[in-house]
Amino acid sequence: MKLISALAAAAVGAVLVAGPVPDASAQRHWNKKTKCEETDPEGRVIPTRYGNGDLGWNHFSGKHNIRKCRVVDAALAGKVDKKSGGRLEYYGVARNGTRFVNIVVIVQYARRTADGEYDAGNGKKIGVITAYCKGVTKCPNWINE
Image (cartoon, rainbow, N blue to C red; front, side, top):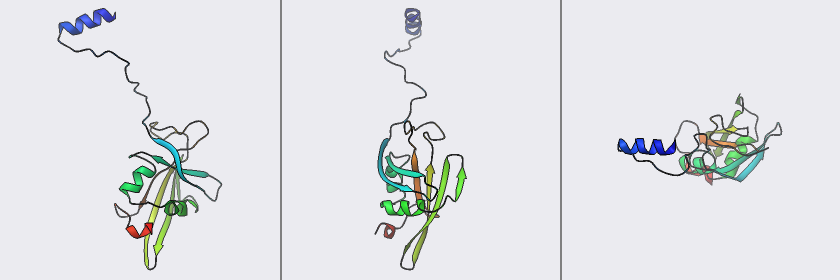
C-alpha cells in the first residue's frame, strides 16, 4: 500500500516526507518546575510553575510585569472570588503608600488545562496560569519593590 501511495504521489509531483507523523493530540512543551507555591484558605496547594510564554511565571512575569512571588501569593491567600469548574480566580490589591492596583490571579486547579494542551502529571495541578493588574496591560514597576 505504501508503494502504491508513493508511486501515485510521484505521478502528480507531490513530495513525500519519511518519518513519524506528529500526533495531533501532542501536548505543548512547558516547564513544570514550581517557582512558588501558596495554600489558599480552603486548603488548596497552588503552584506557580515556570510554564512557558503562554502560561505560568514565564508568561505573566514578562507580559504583565509581575516579578515577585509575593504579589501572586497575596491574592492566593484570600478566598476564591470566581469559580468555573477547575478555573479559579483570586482578586487582590497591591499597595505602595497611596498607590494601589487590583491584581487578578487565574488558576487552573486541575491536572490538565481546559483545552487539553497542558498536563501537570498524575496527582498534580496546573496551578497559576496567569496574573495581571486589572485595567492595564503591564503592572506598574512599584509592585515589584
